[in-house]
Length: 241
Image (cartoon, rainbow, N blue to C red; front, side, top):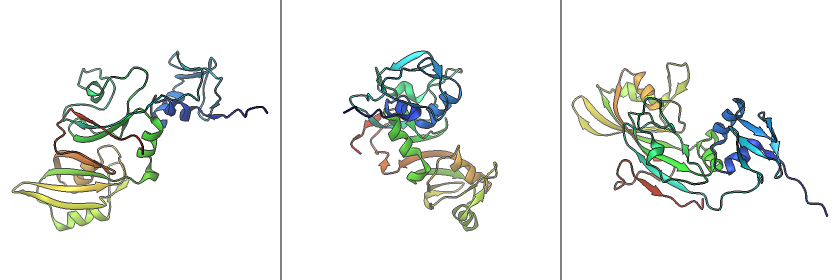
């Protein structure tokens, strides 16, 4: 009996190989950086095991069904001052420089934090897992501890809980918001979101005229920031999820 030839979407195969998230890889394909059998690939392209795939001219694998022997999954405590890109033309420190070195795989970030924020970022070598954790359908909570400057009223808290309009016209809200301490001009709140748009926590507070002067992501889904994990350090997580 002839064995069936299984075709899979190109971005899924590359994500399984740990080269990036599906969204990131789709960007490479749209930019013309991915070739299949010498031809520039297009979004929606499917490949089989015998196809030869290359990214930026580098052959990835002649067997697209092969997967790394073992994927890794870590929780990183991002410090203030690091950016979430692989390199920076200004020479600023990046989160990737602090991660364990890989030989054949590639770290994929699950969500980002801006340079002035700290806390939990998850990294994995499995692009499929990264895609699942970031996809809106996962509905995973992100919890932040924020220190704000200004007088916060009950009306402001209600606005941010029921929904506000951001500077780009999109609606946003906190699914939970709770006072957690402080006095005078500075106070701390714990807030929860189920999405991760650019600087969304800060922008929600901005709609009320309140500035966030410190922001720490303390939880992503079920993964909490350990109290004893210092900034710039990581914790290996169980990949069998």
